[in-house]
Image (cartoon, rainbow, N blue to C red):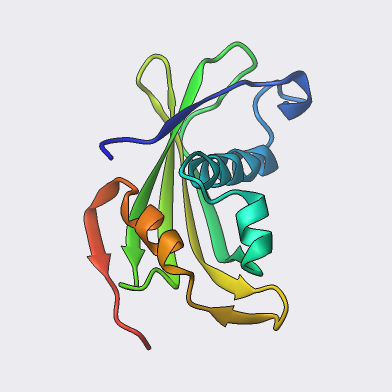
Amino acid sequence: MDAFEKKLEIRWSDLDPNYHVRHAVYYDFGAFSRISFLNEQGITPALMLENNIGPILFREECVFKREIRFSDEVLINLKLDKAREDMSRWTMVHELWTKAHVLAAVITVDGAWIDTRLRKLTRPPVIFTKVLEQLPKTDKFEYSERK
């Protein structure tokens, strides 16, 4: 897959008193992008429930570069930056770009999969691994070793 992008709609409720997007909304945009990717590739909430597995985050960081305002047209992309070969742990990067090709923010998340019955970290089923392998990669992508 060359790219995974989603168009974002900026809602009135996304704005702060300064009329630009509230900081917490950026994290919602990142979650929307990740779950949209999984869902569009067949890793639906129903499949996760059937497999008693779900994604979790250890770290979520946003670097704000430019304001996003109500009238802005914004695209968010999703890339894999680092992962274990079994995709049990991963780092994903999202870039938010305005229609004017201005980088507005970069969101980075470190995550894994949890067994929702045992409440313990787990390896994902093979189909999940194959889907994550399809994600576009950052220029510095690397497979990480198990610690």
